[in-house]
Image 1 (cartoon, helix red, strand yellow):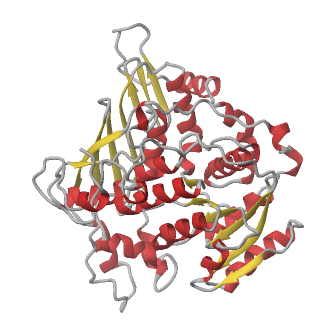
Image 2 (image 1 turned 90 degrees about the vertical axis):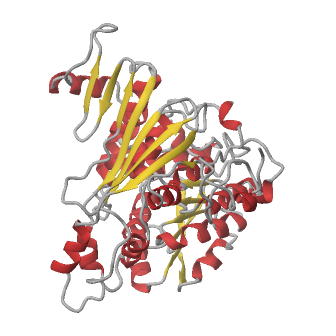
Image 3 (image 1 turned 30 degrees about the horizontal axis):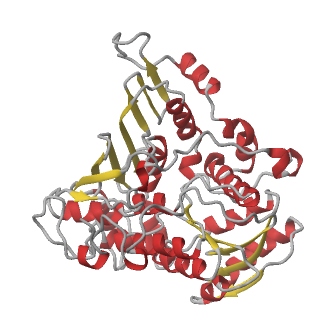
Length: 476
């Protein structure tokens, strides 16, 4: 049954038992209530040989963008926006040190609106606090700009639909900057899956497990305070995309399969409450403030074709960083943190232990994704989460310059960002099942899967001698 977004907001969970507000939608509504399909899937915008980039939000990530842009051909940072003149000055110095022209400055809490309307900017790179992700994206597209936004790019189902509809109406790319899709092991896993070495894919596990409690200690009252507020106010999985999006590309989500429904539960809340009471300085008003976010959120997702995905989120527990990245098929499995792999020697023989270190390393090098073979060494030199930030930026820049479709589109953004709202609602309702909207409006059945992509360095103009290490890049 086709349902408009506003009507569906009055609808029920998948079981039909409980109505919910601000919910989700199974078929298109709003601006495109009569549209079927996904017109932005596979969309190739007119070529932009020399990209004029505007960066909004010059914190650690925004400053890293400026550094990477200085290392890549055919792109110039022409505009910088932040609420801090000091942060803009740091970015300007980086441009000057690299012999680049000074960028136009937009200073103030609402200055991003003017930047989004600047006719001398082609692309917006949005590294603002989470509350500004959606407003900046909408303003950028309505201002005629392609927009690339840090994760998650939206938080509610309704926001996701508005981004989808606006991208379709304006014919502007709206891509989520999910750098983990360009991690070496994620791309290796994708390559192994596409080569058929895992057989038919059955199950996957992804996560964002990262002890971030120290951010609360150092953040008061300003730095990173917005991230603390998000976890104080919301449960569920508030940061789903690092673990989920690479798996979605490997499983051809929105390209032959789609995320169908989920259930979610929150664990107890022990670690962060202890930390605030025992580590924060006396007088900090947050010490006795309850947190809605649990230590661990676990969600199970079922796809339309019957695959299962376990997704976890934990930023409060004292445990090592992991995104897990397990992919299991009918012929074998791979997993990260650390990287492991196993394949059956012959059908039905079983696979009871991971390959040894030597065999695993041989596999890693033999089946390394072509994009990592081409750009990996340069990416690791520059830095940025082990090089994946550099590869991500190099790839979208190359695509815009060559007039190619992007690797990810607004439908990928929507299908994975809406997990924020749906996991919270499900956890709040004792693991009730929630349907995940089909933002492609049925086009997932015929959309073409992402292939094995690469970059032609000669055509791109990327030369080894012009790529320099950038110590300001984020490492974790």
